[in-house]
Every structure is written in structure tokens, then in C-alpha cells.
Length: 258
Image (cartoon, rainbow, N blue to C red; front, side, top):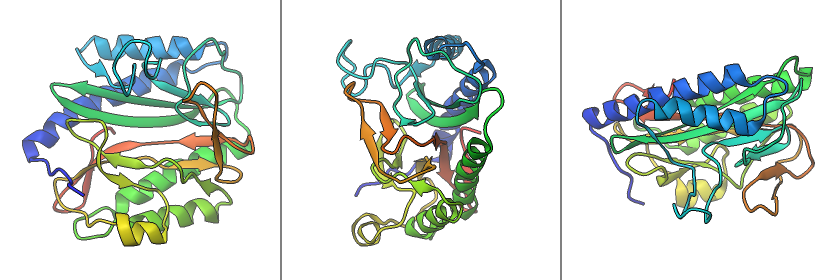
């Protein structure tokens, strides 16, 4: 695989768009209240990044032809929706678990991040799920440094999720990111023999990766709705999705979307 290595100046450019991604998600998190529709959150996100001249990456993806690709500006997934939820008329309710995924391009560089928040007063199960998802992402951040194989990071991520009684989604993984939203390599959140044999890679300073654990309360199996986008847990249990764009540095890593 051909993995792009970025210079310090290029990473600074990615940090600039990463800040806008984070600001957008912070605004949406505060607005995720009972009675608010997912479409309203989507439009709020669009208005937030448009003020600074950023461009959304999701609308009409992957064709960028109107009506041919993803219909939303953001992906908003609720409860048993894992990823790629389409914003619409659904009103958020007290106790909902909401994942918001935002990808932007600015001055030729991309940033991608996702948060999961609880609406109102969540259940104990939902609270634990969200906590474990963020812990898993933080664990990856603490382990990333040059010279390590990705499998040395994916395995502890999976172990942390499963030790808490949850499951890692296997059909969808993280990715390299830079001038394009999706670059090499694939960045799984779980260990497999296939990863070690065919998809493993050594971390090098200058790599920029979108690391995005997806955690399900029940089994890891997922299904895709007839809309062709929305991914649900097959057993209808709660799911969480969190993500950061991360640059590997000489001493460890730098989170570009914090």
C-alpha cells in the first residue's frame, strides 16, 4: 500500500480544518436536546462551517453529483444506528444516544471526526457505552508512536471494548486522510490474522489517520437499511461511534480534531 507522509506545514494545515470540525461538533453537541430534529442539527453544522469557508465532505459522497450520493451534510446516527445515519425529521428524545460524524475540507486539506452524546438523562447502559467508546479512542492515542505496528494498537482497542462486555464493529474501519477524505491505509479497531498478514503497517512520523472505534452493546453484526447508507446493529442494541484525525509525530502523536 502507498501511505502518504505529510510535512509539518501540511499537518498544520490539517490542524486548521481540524479545529473547524471540532467547533462544528461542539455546537451540535450543545444543540442535541429533546425535540430537536436530526435535520436541524445537520443544518446547524452546515451553517457553522460555512461561516469560515470550509466545505463539507459528505454531501453527495461518493459521486459528488446531486442526488447520486449521501444526502446529508453530516452523518447523524441515533441509538441502534451505528454509522451513516441520514439527517431528517426524526426528533431526538430524552435518553437517546446520538453519534454525529463531520468531515470537512479547507484550503485543500481534510479533517474527519465523530462524537457520541446522550440526550437528556441516559440509561446506565448508554452512559457506559459512550464512556467505553471514548476510552477506546483515547487508548489508541496513547499507544500511537513511530515504529509500532497498527496491530499492536488495534488489539488493545478490541480487548478494552470486549472486556467491558461490548463488541467492535468489523465491517467498517478507520482510514488514512489528507488531501482526500479516504486514503491508505485501512485502520481497523480490532485485531485479526488477516490484518497481521495482509493489512498491517508500521507507523511513521507524518502519517495522518482517522481512527474511529464503533462499539455495540450486543453482537458485532450490522445491517444496512434500504436507503443504502444507514448501518444498524443487527440485534437492535445501542451503538456509539467516536473518531479523531491523528498525526503520527516523532514522539508519539498529535490529535488534529481535539
